[in-house]
Length: 252
Ligand code: PGA
Image 1: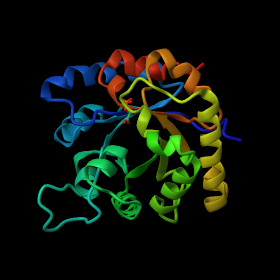
Image 2: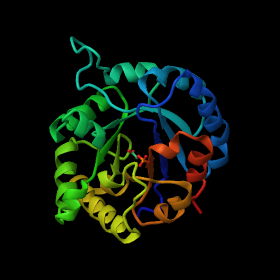
Image 3: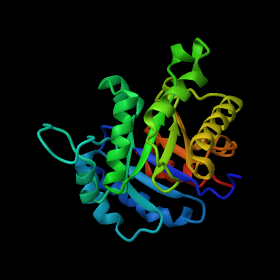
């Protein structure tokens, strides 16, 4: 059923990257063609680098530029915030919303994440909606309940495989070197797939579900081979072109 879904390998640079990082990005761009048969690439640098990277990526077949957050409104008196329209104007094609670091550092609720996803669509961007449980929630056996609640609350109606990507990122696996077992990833991604189909019918079967949390070249092949894992959202390992491209190239 999900065999035909083209994988997406997305790099989330978080608050890393200066203009000096352009050379690393150019190496990603140069290598993108070598994985074009296997996957689409998305690089989400800090907002300060979006326009410069997007200019360089113009015309690239399988590498696009994304952002890491947006404000729900298109414009107005919101000091320091960036709207989805501004991101699109800078050359972004997608935006991550509801990353666990935003949820934790900025108290973002499912309702706000939903508004941000709607803002992304209003501006013509793909929304990458992140969900995932904390260690305490996992220890309490609440993983599936948390994922169901976040998905239900964060996902606007009218989601399609063209405007939505879901990223499952267990909070305890982010930046820790820890990953769930393949069996756990398979169970949770299957659960998310079933929720998407229940809500969105046929479209739910086609939406990409990424796994995120300590994805590295050394574990990517195993993780990406799991049913309903349609790519990866990568933090630390996305800062180095060699690692990022190696992960993308790990598709059989
Ligand atoms: P990590 O981060 O790959 O460094 O664990 C993943 C993420 O937060 O998207």
